[in-house]
Image 1 (spheres, rainbow over the protein chains, first blue to last red):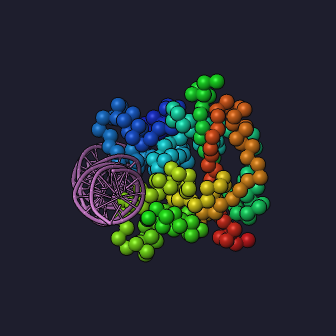
Image 2 (spheres, protein in one colour; image 1 turned 180 degrees about the vertical axis):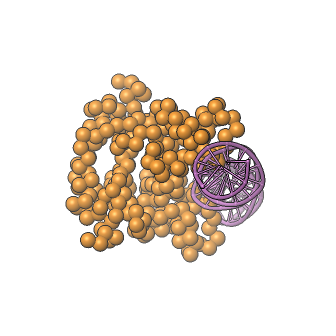
Image 3 (tube, rainbow over the protein chains, first blue to last red; image 1 turned 45 degrees about the vertical axis):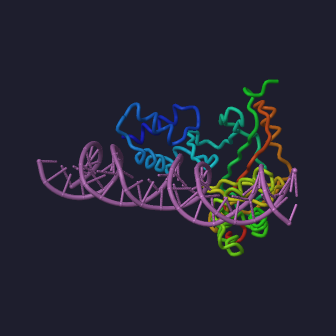
Length: 119
Length: 119
DNA sequence: TATTAAATAGGAATGATTCCTATTTATATA
DNA sequence: TATATAAATAGGAATCATTCCTATTTAATA
């Protein structure tokens, strides 16, 4: 089943690949795979909660890490780094101050990563 | 100049309108305006820092509020609310722990807004 | 094995956005 | 003011990621 190949492709790439990249990658194993199949399986994997989708400048990236975490995008090398926070008090802040009920969030920082940042 | 009309259209809409919405809105004043003009002017306004762009499910929304603030998206009515935080210690957390240099960020919470949330 | 359901390839269709070009409008300069 | 130059525009074609459609293949089940 191609769905598993799509899944392992995402998991093995420690990056946050696009549908296009995944397509090319899986194609190495199954040359006849089609774009439709990749997208359909990506959708199903997202629905099952096995992967996450990250919209970046209007194009979708996929993330095999479904544990709660955040993303840092380097403006120079365009790498996407994961990071975790010690406390996420902004959730309770918003619930208390604005009386919304928060069920999810996405935090994305941008800047220069430690590799590009030549101090 | 149409650029100003595009700008005031965004400012007057207290929402976070899409290019499509802005196009329709400005069209009321200038029926001959084209999509190309709207997009070109939106791009220039973003470049000048007069508006901000928010990517949401792969389509661009525009925000006339350029002061630092965050967004809450209601899953039920799809409204986008602005909110501010008292402290944003996640920036220093990431700079200290991951040694990246942070120059900007985007925080987006999702959930049920106080209007949809019938307690 | 026969029957039914799910998955697939391939390509067409869609929709947001960008690009291109001839024309119009604004700006600067003599 | 008249003229040259630059910026802005309309309109539509082109692009690109994504979705949709359909005939065919594969898997699951009785």
